[in-house]
Image 1 (cartoon, rainbow, N blue to C red):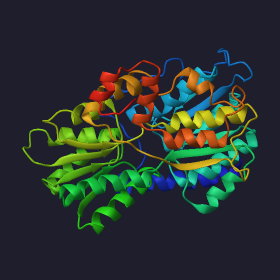
Image 2 (cartoon, helix red, strand yellow; image 1 turned 135 degrees about the vertical axis):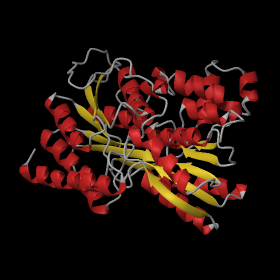
Image 3 (cartoon, rainbow, N blue to C red; image 1 turned 60 degrees about the vertical axis):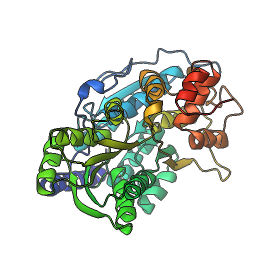
Image 4 (cartoon, rainbow, N blue to C red; image 1 turned 135 degrees about the horizontal axis):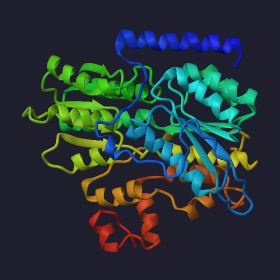
Length: 418
């Protein structure tokens, strides 16, 4: 790495550590209260391993080794995001090299460098804050390794312009974070709730920050009052952070948690208090969904997309590596940050669990059709149709069409089919 870039990174990381000292917001990891719910990748490599591709790609497509960094294996959210990328890579006949950043901001760029040094053909990158994207771009351009931005996308216009100009940039995709926050605020206001505690991770997190800002704008415009915005510094700090906030601000109407790790901790804090406080959350996991279905739980509302950006980013990169980049009518790569969240009603919980948690959301056949090398009709427009139409209902209808779900089960879930 060039000395100039190392110096910039040192200043950035010093700033992150200073932020941690003053606000308790370094790391940004969403750590689960119930670690046993976290899915595990099936064959992806751990840090330090250097697998050579052994899988067989579909006819007409290449076989690659693809690096994936993720902040910590102690987070259901980030493990699910990682596993969604790994599953696509494996089902498309290539090999994944996932590397755990060990919840250490200083290790992120080191891990990207290690992927490049390990002769990865491409990188699926998850960056903690905006200031990390330019150094990432420089590393990949110098190493001549294509990269895709996964889940977190920069907001700074100059950074965006620099990345788009990089010849090794393959695309960027993430969730519609503002929609997450707005929909939670709308739900709370419709319930007549007026006071809230917000629980999140890093105050500079490019995913959580727009969710919180959009939530606050909508909620406060509707007459709501944000009592406090609490940020957990690390996995170990999540529970005490919400416990302390509830001591300082007892019995709010609800808690807005920006992810399931925070919502589950919030529920744990509320049990036994006898309060009417509810928990509303952006993000889905099996524990939070089970609590949503439990009438005795304070969990009241969830939205999310099951971290599908991990799958879509892998599809973008695989096409890039095949020499078939996904380009719009202007010749630009994918840059999309509007993957829409969906809710999971209790009537649909069993089907969600089966086809999103127990099984993968896309079949191998569906994924093979998302490579131009295999399916010449696949292109940018078709890909964007897949992304924009993605929802719980759309995925369940696809499984119904395959005969994996009965008409009676769809009727019970409230999904109309012919």
